[in-house]
Image (cartoon, rainbow, N blue to C red; front, side, top):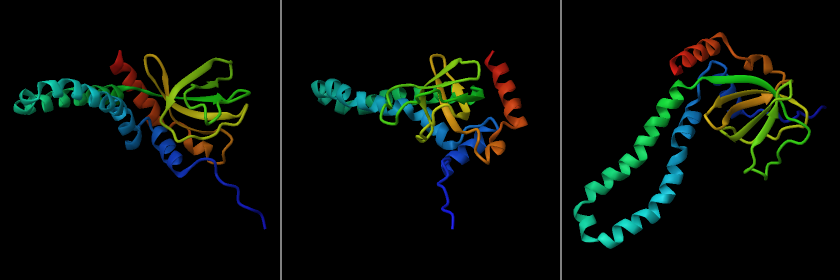
Length: 185
């Protein structure tokens, strides 16, 4: 009796690939991108609120609505602007190779570097994918977003996977990409 080999493409990654192939983001990807700066902002707000509220004391208590309004503006304005930006951002698809020594899982602060067939390096500063260990010199199907300073991995899977044909971009992917690139210009 032959042992079943564990599938390296998780159920969550399959769902991401099936959605990204149509040029769309999953709700989890959308939420992660829109709320990403929220955590950093909340960490910064704690000491900032102590600095501004403690000395003011009674004035802050009387004008609590002003404090709430400022917090709402500081939190929701960036979230709304990010939501608008990602709603119009075109997704990209490319087959990339992992190179000779892919990044180890514990080096999470370093960018993931993948290469196309011509040797051009694609540096992904952050990704919205669950960690999947990359094998050296293997080909991967990659969906990503291009930001001004970096690229974000949305989903990836081995190009040699038995289900790889079902994860290729559909005609809707190309239509959406064209529409979003025209609206961006």
